[in-house]
Image (cartoon, rainbow, N blue to C red):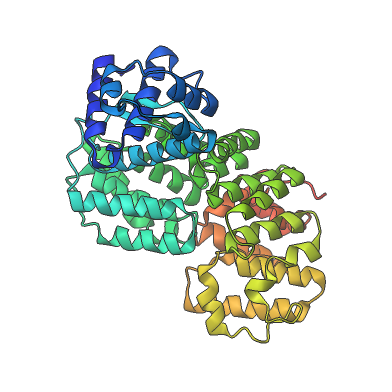
Length: 476
């Protein structure tokens, strides 16, 4: 469709200034400045220092923004210090996202500020004329669901599914249909059983959209998830993810699915660059992005970088945060630093005695499933490797009871517990179940996920990797 005409971009800017979340002069001024830099050279020179200095010392060239934003005698220096510029950039990014998820769904031009980039993405909206409007109440539910997914916590994932279940079915609205499969698929990276549960709905909805001749990026994303989970067609899945990334003006690039699949296909450096850019710019306090990056660094053998990434997260979150604790444990276990690996998990599971589970009733363990889908299995694996076989076996029994009461529980947890008990045949059995019966998206990582290195010499595990079309790694 080509780059938008300047007059179309300026018209879109006026709409954004009228949006209720952009009424503050600072944010309007910053947005106008970013757009002006895009006009000049697509924002190639943008950095926090450049932005802060320009807004402090220079008048904006966009006449309308100057007139709306600047007040006579206003001192701007304090507003554009380094940390405040970063914070304001984050506010602009979030407000743009909220606008195009709701009021601006069908605007002819889209202006976005993606994580990891100071330069805005400005493009014509390919669906502005092809898609009917979303009812306001549906748009709100979709926005709330996507926001809940962004945090990458189990609690947020369940909340997103509750919003999803409130969305009425309307086969005449392609965007609504697309989101009805996108939301649960995106949740699948947090609650891995979700893709298998919605497979019939997803396939029917995607087929319906294709027959109608429309392809919202959410539907392309959902189809990419299906190619990965249902048939393990990694090449086609990655191709679809990259198409969804293009059609969403870069929004999908930072989802776990995309970077996870890049890592699986041997493009781990590219995946780490994407996440490092996100963490380094507008997602510094986003624990999900930090832990995603740290785990990829572990897979790449960059243990010092991963430890620094996780340790710096302690500036804004507690040591016993489940996501942080899990990734610290995976980092240290990958280096066989087992005493260090167990320490972050003890406050969550232990009763005060070293490696003790005697004060952990099954009901409490089920309740703690809200912590992280792999936490219990990782704890059992490390305990078993430390020689606490009774504790590991007890935790595995708890996980089995979880599985009986909640089939959505991940079989990979039981595989990890079996590794700790050195029951490798059993571990492979649970991995096979996760891949072929539960469509667990983590199957794409079976050849590189650090705890599974203990299975590399196992004949059944090598056969499983071949069935999944994943490279067989040598045992180190």
